[in-house]
Image (cartoon, rainbow over all chains, first blue to last red; front, side, top):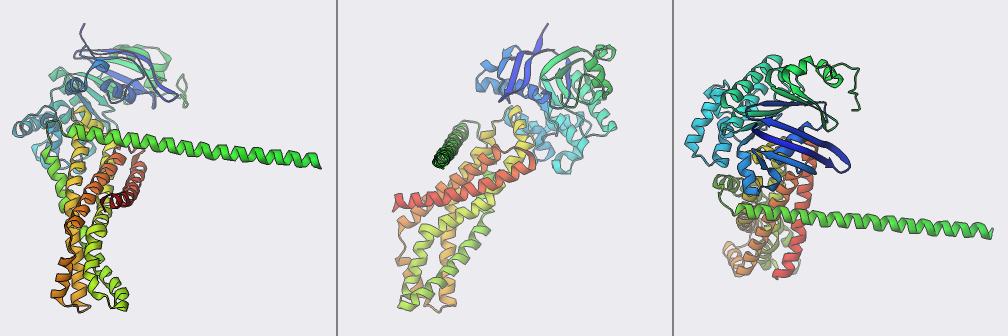
Length: 253
Length: 275
């Protein structure tokens, strides 16, 4: 079985605060893996560690079979070109127009000529159901849903192998969330991209996940397929999915 | 009674030692923090400079920063220089006229503007206008994950964000200093000739006679150093800002304060070295 991401015994501490405790997970090529968990459980830190934005305290992270810690800066940049991220707030560059944002990775990362990069960017905007007329407007003029679509277009513009989605539907109304979920599934399945997402949104989770891992106190305590998630009687999963007040999750945990 | 006094003295001595220990501890802590900051700033600037000289080069970013620093700072720098030159001439006249030394005014304005006021005022204005803007912009990019986005798009954030600013700051603040010198001297001329009724030809002759190339060059050297420091502080504080809008605000204040202090401190050091 070919894995695009392999995380083994990943631990990350900030001072005395151990955020991740020996987390292990594997993501197959073309698979959509969703990490769920309460606020502060370490989901974002996990993704940042995989991307090399935060240095782990211990453990091994492999992307496409390469140990990230062993890579030189140049190799790390090359590996990152195969990864894309859809940030929670979009993280669009305020000073650049929509088309400049979408073509940014192509021009500065892959060194594609500007004309060609703009052509690809317009294609990607179309792929996320955005009209060409938005190309020249600035992120401040976009609605939340449109920002997410532009960010998704920017993420898929470089034809990545893996896409990381950080709470892709946060702050969106249910209909826009549904549209974004649909776009994520369509883009990842059509392009054969593996996806690692973190979300609190149960609808989104059911829609976009092939496999799910529940992170609790820095440890993955449950892992299973989308179908197993619905069928399981694990008290943690049941409480999280149903949003029950009573159960192993407490306000302090 | 004696025993009680002995206990009191012992207690006072103990408290004194405790206080001394606490003060030393605090001073030591601050000193270590200061050294850490210097190390961190040095590494930050080294990373930016080394990455900036490696291809590919982001010319568009460098040009954009050049316009921001060189062109858009001109009005504020020019206005400051003009009024400083004017005020200085008036102040000198009030003092010099008592000794009938009015003829020295053009020379004093010339020397003061080129050696000190030109570089320091231009730098302080740039620190207030651009240093703050740099910190706010980079800080906002940091807290909204835009810098992370740059990294994940395989773009070196030091090379893309920091180097163009440091480079243009280092080379364009001297240009602003030169403009500042010229406008400041012009301000002095306007007040001298049109308000204090100096002879225009004499004023210009006195000004030109007191012009020394090294005064101007030293001002430009100072400008270059100040430009580097302003942009470095602006980028550094923005890059390491945290804690949302409040954190960015705090970083912006720190950046302007640090730049201003550094400008005045380095002005003293450079004056000592250059003259």
